[in-house]
Amino acid sequence: MSRRHVWLSVFVIGLLAFLPMTGAVAAEKKQEKVGGGLNFFSEEQEKSMGKQYSDELKTKLDLVQDSFVQSYINQIGQKLAQNSLRPDIGYEFQVVNTGEINAFALPGGYIYINRGLINTAGSESEVAGVIGHEIAHVVGRHSTNQMSKQLLLTGLVMGAGIGVGAKSERWGEIINALGGVGVALTSMKFSRDHERQADKLGMATMVQSGYDPGGMISMFQRLNAESMKKGSTAMAFMSTHPLPAERVKNMEAEVRSQYASAASLTKTTRSFDLVKERMAAMPMPPPQQEKTLSAALASLDQDGRGQAAGGAAAAPASKPVYTGRKALALPGDTAWLDTGIDLVPGQVVEIMAKGQVYYKRNSKVFCDPDGAPGTASGFWKPISKANTGALIGRIGDNPGAFVIGSMRVFQTNVGGRLILGINDDNATDNLGGYQVYILVR
Image (spheres, one colour):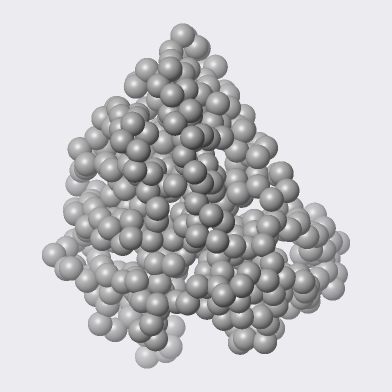
């Protein structure tokens, strides 16, 4: 039997192990409509996974203890959740005491909103827009869909001893094989279809809950503008919630076509003003002690149980060598570019990139920082199985490069100079380039 036939046989056997689970998911009509697609996790497993990692995440964060603020956000969240297409899973909402501008939804309905995001909002409908968008990611089961894709693409579902059936409790083993939930979640980029669906579902949920849907548009525009400011922590939000102009246009068209009469719905309330006033009176954590959501997610270490692969918790950075936001131009013909940023173990690095590279000589074909799919066999590329033209990186002389793409958030476990490159076996004839934004904590 040829190597190719062996590989195909293993693929089929591995995939069949998951069919009972995907069949169970597809059996629910509501999930067929919204939360369908590839998914190796049952709803029960999704919820159990989310609870486990939410419980751990709470130990790594400073949560706002003010009962008025927490009650206010929970009230908005529960109202939106009950008007969503997945109201019965038991959502939980937490406010994180950090100035970082961010929000994140774990699988199963565990949603975290940073104090900095609420401070940035100009109205209650803007806060509701972000929460509605995060709920929509849960409704669409986007996290477990992306994890399932990663498992399939990396071949881990075919690995010996990692077969998962409908009644298996071994999803934790699968997540560990991915590198831990921290790696899976912080490196996760929802597809453009996922983001569009979250916009559309979130907006519908807002209207059903009595909120002006324009709040979602104005909040995302506000966050996009904020992320472009030097030193802004809004980049943390945009690294996991990219906002191309096309998405804003889609949202505006949705309001015009579906919600023309929604302008009379709630834009803001006196409670929103009171919450802003109460939070303004709360002291911010000292910068050295601030526990951001991005750092906490990244520190859900690689075995998914709060310990690093060697058994010891990852050490915090002793002294940040570089902090703040840095913008760099990466020409398309770059092999490797020295960023001038020295990293130490324990730091959280957020990288966002945009632009286009023409990777074929005398051709108008181009790619964005995620690279061009279907060109994965080049032997001499720094990462032979990654897309041609993808933005990649390495740290000092440590072996192995890693894919960055249009965004990546990670915690360093080694030290050295951050080097960026373009994944091409011969980049010298490339045109165009990428604009790269780097934030280090």
